[in-house]
Length: 294
Image (cartoon, rainbow, N blue to C red; front, top):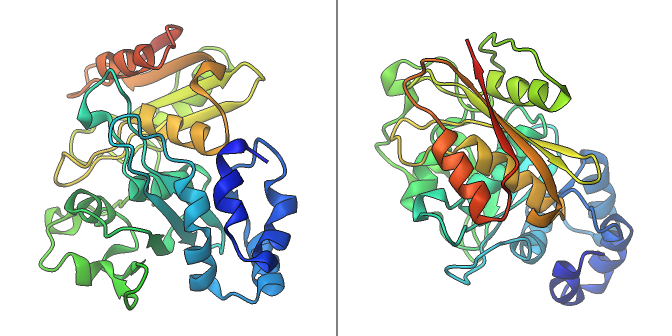
């Protein structure tokens, strides 16, 4: 079991510890449970969907990287598939506040990068801030997404974000987590192709500037991140953070990164290059390349 889980795991109820122990035994636990695994955990622990998500929050929060605030937030997203995805806030000392990933963004983008097509519920240990409420408003689940908080009745995103402004007001038809492709093609090795594939999945209805990042680890594992824009612009999630998020939730350290590639479209309105390079340098990675797709 990864050391970050030790204290939170020990505080869980015994029946839940027994159910989780075999799944958490690997240091490379992927930060998620499949629908089948979740069903088995529920059967062995006696918990329903919402109760299990609440019980898992301390484990999710243990994945946080909070070198600035030292305030850990955890989130658990449940997809329409029945899979459960951890999320935790991530901060990057040496960069700007704008590079931060909130726990809700973390869980949502984690599910998205794992291939989830829509979310049913999001459970968080602290009330979502306005930034996160706006980010969630970009989702294809819309205002019906259930938000679960400790000690409060279950509510919807519409309850937390009344009179919202979002993609539907701008007649955007492809929403975050919808399947889409920007038909980008480029030559290169496997990591370059992974970055292009991530760029093709981008949600970029406002700037039309698709971008993707692929990160190779020293053990050969590859993590990718796609760019996710927001109608309010500021809650937009860069592709690098999307990739680093899944990497971190999967138990890897930044020092394990061997190489990174950013793929983006030539002549696009926006570029991710300067921010991507600066953030990677801040976490100790200098081996980053830019692939510009004509």
